[in-house]
Length: 255
Image 1 (cartoon, rainbow, N blue to C red):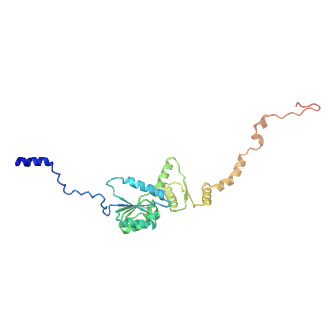
Image 2 (cartoon, rainbow, N blue to C red):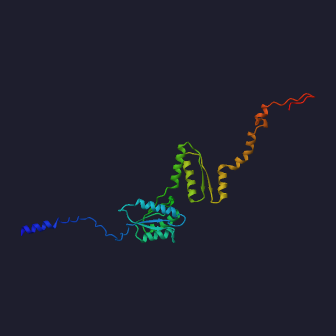
């Protein structure tokens, strides 16, 4: 009997390993994601900023291309209701953190919703004035861009700066940053010209920046000062060929 039991035990194969105490059980395939594990993504997937929104979404997916990464809950800020409605949907879905939106206006809407629900918001805007507890500005600020540009120009020996910028929030921020950076580094005050979208505004702004009117007024006097005193000065043959002497009376000049 003992030999028979030993033979049966040998045929049964090795016993399965004992479960590890305290190890988390893997969720079954297709199980719902627990609240707080998803990442909300607010981007314009339609409208004028659709291309940039799609590129940002592709970059976000590439950055989180990992089996252990949390799932993405993508919301379109260009859909009806805008960024505010997209943020409300993300909060209602239980997203633990929100990436986006893209613009300053959309960020202002989404930040109010996210802050009231205590959901962290990592916005892609470059408007640092929107940053506050729970809202982080992830874009490159105008002050950072201008400081790098001035540093690169100074490395080439340049000391004087000017800017021709659109008359909007970003343009004004960059103009202010240029003035502040130049003042902090002891450089001459830059000339900053703002323009609207009209062709007349752009043309007039460029004339002002290049001092066009003063240059135009000085052009005639400069041209006169540079002009030769007579035609002989510009005709080398006039001085090189001697005049033909007059023929004596009664003789014919050679033909």
